[in-house]
Length: 328
Image (cartoon, rainbow, N blue to C red; front, top):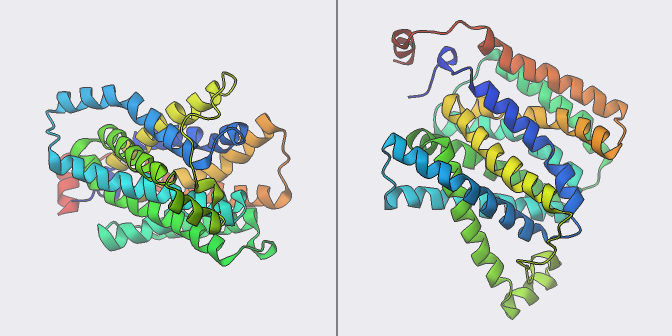
């Protein structure tokens, strides 16, 4: 049974805010260590470390709630880890190979479009007029920021750039019921661990000569002979800790806590705020300038985010009886 609009826990917006702040700095941190690591190596490292950091807290949560993690539960975590980590993040790396990283990142901000449609099709979540207006403003904002009419992208680049948010959105929607059954913290932790193990298996396969030669011939050299321990330096540790513990561990945990306490559609607000906050980080930390089209896009996305969140924030809390009556 899905929560009504009035029954949504307002703390979900706190988790959304924390996730937005952490995820928006990901590109800056990744750019700092980009030349030191293979893309898949960095992805594997951050989800594995993030999962390990969350493991003690997940175990404590499981014991406190009296949850039984049987083979069925582990199967769910493994499947979600395969989809959300091994597949989705790998596709995202392929998108970066074939398309500009800025384009990939901006298109990823369209996750709410896919999440809204998949939530409606798969689990029956609905959204009203304000949410549709929010979606329209955010799509306009994304277009103003990336200016697709001025960018030439290859067909593979377009396909991978769209598949990346689509697969992650499917991951978000399918994980909703698992989050409510086992908790956002536990789900995040074990999805990362299983996803990392699945990626490690794939990385090991890239050292098979025949597979490595095939990847090289397909112009995917970065996916051949994926290293595991190369590139680690003392100077890069702070950025790696931020990526693995902050943005990955805590960020994803808060994201799924938001899903658990609201809806997949509401939690997708983080993808509205990320294009707003990311340029701010870039200005402060990298000294970049914000162009007029980016500023216009940010304004549109702020309006979209306001249309999305304010109706729920302004509603009065309802009693359990009223909520049950509405849901019925």
